[in-house]
Amino acid sequence: MRIINLTSPHGMTYSSNAYLILGDWNARSDVNTMIDVGNDAAVIERLSHISTGLGKRAIEQVILTHGHFDHATMLPQIRAEFSPLVYAHPAFTDADIALRDGEELRCGDRTFQVFFTPGHSEDSICLYCEQDATLFVGDSPVVVRSKDGTYEQPFQAALQRLCEKRVQAIYFGHGEPVLDGAQAILCESLSNIRSAMEN
Image 1 (cartoon, helix red, strand yellow):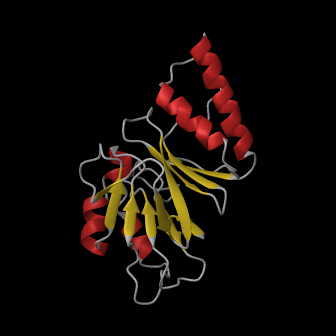
Image 2 (cartoon, helix red, strand yellow):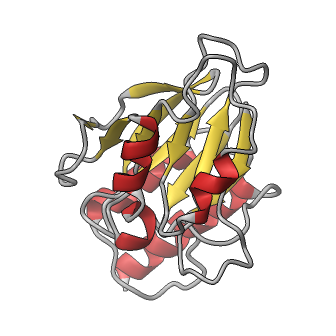
């Protein structure tokens, strides 16, 4: 699996990260996938410089981690340019296919599992690849340093399920990924949330 962030960290437009997921060898069976489309029109120009497979659409499917503007604004332009299938939580009404918690999807040459993680928004999801121990979280608050705050029980339950998985890398909606100590960060966050809920 290849993970390419199409959003420039030096861009002038406020945008989420927009990740392109490709297979290692651009095989015909790979499913070229965008996780979030962001709010920066430059992602389309960047796509034109990436080898995504002979005779294949650069984007075959889009999965939105949630529908906030900085993650989803470019969807009409991406649709017009690439005609992808769009997957999102049922609360996001502009998707082609509503995702179910626990559902599995092929992205690039890997299988990802959907986790509903309500909290940041009612339509927030995370995407987990067991084979590569990789987690895409959008804006779900999986890094919790404080033992204060309020967290809904469904989010706490979802985070507990994620802590039971092997996670070596976390890709966020904003900022750089965590590529070291990811599992410990998730478990620390769950512990802090439990402490906050007990206070």
